[in-house]
Image 1 (cartoon, protein in one colour):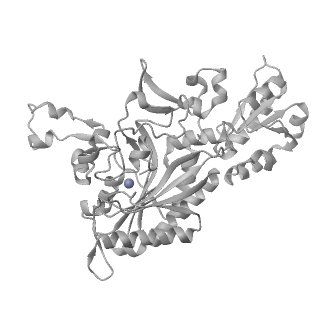
Image 2 (cartoon, protein in one colour; image 1 turned 180 degrees about the vertical axis):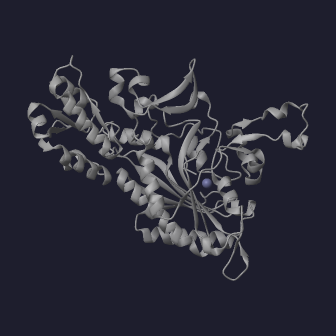
Image 3 (cartoon, rainbow, N blue to C red; image 1 turned 120 degrees about the vertical axis):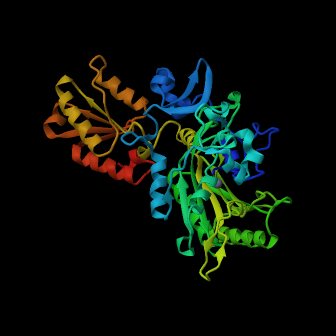
Length: 472
Ligand SMILES: [Zn+2]
């Protein structure tokens, strides 16, 4: 599940269920603020001036003889944690999941098309899916197995969304009301067809991730869960520095399910929105046919809107997968499903963040946190020790000991590359076990003990502050 409205992966993500295919006509023309150029351009615009994106950029669009695959490769210099390879934004989500009782699951990328028939995606969404034919489908082989011909010819598809797989997880054994709400989160790779001409940077890819989660709950838990979803959005967007506003989309003219269920659900959503206290607008008739939804529009530092997160109720998938749990009264009951995403497409969010920060990543997301610069060759050994202290503390520390470049130019180079901090070490710092620290805006922060600098950087990183340079 992902963002709503618009088009591309996010738009498709907003329609997880049967009959929800993206509108074909004009579906590409709704992008309000397309992000320019390649993925590398987006993530690190300054670097484009000093070399090709493949060596200096962060993410490289896979290409073969000019034909783009619509996937991206992390060149290990993106806004991620170098030591784990995990994108910093995802770590933020992972921590929130642990705090909020979500279980992270990993579901297969490849499923039989039978799954998509059951979920309804096959009927309405198959043209947006990559379909694969297993080798046996070419015809019977000499070695006859127990499989029938029809089974051998079963087609496979790359998953365009996680919901059906999560329904399988719910359904794989009897469930009790005691297990609800069951909150499943999945960062699994999703694949959706996109015409190559429509691929663009990180904005529109054929392979992407979402901070996708599905909550299976009892009807009387709905209100609490929606409140929890709104609070989740608020926490993450606050850290990222986005303001946002919300919209409630209600029952469309063509809908499935019972009217009283819809009315009840819409009232619950409305109540949760009112209690949340942020202004929201009503979009009558804009809900998906399977349930009402809350769309989230974020606004970046330049005031530009982006549609990313979404919270959607779904009465239909639990029916299609015949999901049931044993209720408190000893009677089987049907859970309600909530699809929700905060970031939507993670890749697209990285592009939005890159534009939002203009290449000046906050320390906690920065791939270039600190550059250690020895004044002369005599301090190289000490500079290396400082670098190791940074690395040992889980910080990103690089070393620039290029003897062919003057000290002033190396400092300038680190500043232009947007290293949050430069740590200069000369003879005095070496003898005192200190560093001379300056911020990327050129401000001198003075001489500090190495342990003090490392400790302070760790604190600022853990607090995910946006202005570590000022707060140091
Ligand atoms: Zn979903």
